Image (cartoon, rainbow, N blue to C red; front, top):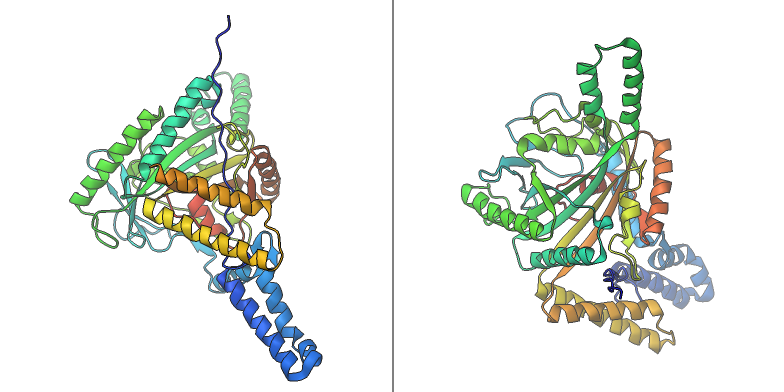
Length: 475
């Protein structure tokens, strides 16, 4: 007699929503298309077909800009992106250099891609570094976490962990103080501490053996890497935006942080401790200078909250101290049943340095229901207009309607709704290696049944959002 084995729970995601007021066109597209039609009709009424042809130089580009798409984005949305990029280049805002002079005051942090400055204070009970952004009115704390080999466990244990993680995410929707949660998984070069120990303790041995082992350790430094998982949570302080974080606010925030730690432990995750202010600088620096972090090893805490020494943003990549980076946005998650570990090709592929970021923003139930019903009304109006002009509703629209109905049923049943954003940051030492790493990343995304799109014109902001554990909002 054989004992039946449990089947692993599968995951499936909905399509990316494409909202539109009429026939899939947004407000800006409809406005530009209306202007094009007015110009064309005015030309016909004023001079007949000759006026229509004469005004084609105006209404044809407007019509194309309103209806055409390039790389999945309407042309009308490319214009402000290109304009902002050129304006920032003219104003010199695409490059930044850090002064070697000390910053005025302790606990001040400036990061390229983030407007204003961040203040860092220490929580008295947990020791966590509380990163306060007065401009956005949120406080962020970073936690080191680790797992126990999810892919190696049996299906029943995997199902239990998936259910526990789902309950943790669902509980976020019941806590208004939590603005967003960021899970950051990155691969970093390792070997610096090994080589440092060997140079300081073992180079006094036999010359021949020392040279051989030194070469082996140097090779291990250049090829080895280790995985690191950080969890950043952004909270809304009790006194609102722009206020100084006082003792009462810190105490309230620590209560939420303690509840989050309890939830993570219930989800069978190992909590390795909060990132303290003296460790925050090294955690952030690893995103800008991975080679320097590997050479330095773990040198302990530092009182310096240093960002990058220099940043140069380009159209499709960003260059920092010792690396170049390219940020991808996950536009489509798997739309068929997949194993919960479907991201394994992206996360654990050897030889490529990647940083994967998942941002989860809990939505209040009332707000989520309003968005769903507004979208359903837009779909209904769009379907009626298509039927009026004789167009047949495609299967993609039916799939979106089914996904909206499922989400509404879940909300009515008491479940929470979260908005997810996925970013993948690819890191290399130069642009040639970056091109090869990007090709490997695109292939790995295809294996994970995800569709990714390389962001352009906003790589600096995307890097600050996707590569830094600061729980920033999506782009």
